[in-house]
Length: 108
Image (cartoon, rainbow, N blue to C red):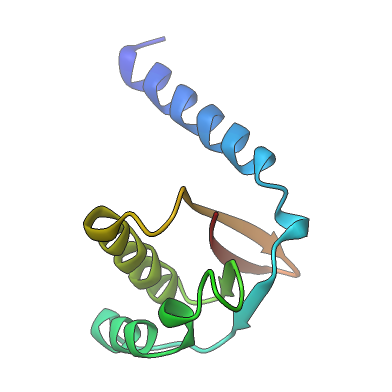
């Protein structure tokens, strides 16, 4: 096994352990099943809408079927946390359900 395979296995194992500790079933989720054509549209929607502005106050987690929305939210939450230390942790996961991929982002 080469070093790259070890690194991928370790990081994937670490992410699974972190996700299990957060107990996703206890999270208040905001679900938004809307899709955008471009990342720029998705970023504007996330940054100016409920997903970014109400996370941690009205809900802890966000679920979407659009990977662009998930990426935009994750990016903006990480940026905000780097500047202002707003969250203890930011987590992301994906789940396959009924033939669709759901992207989940949550904070604690």
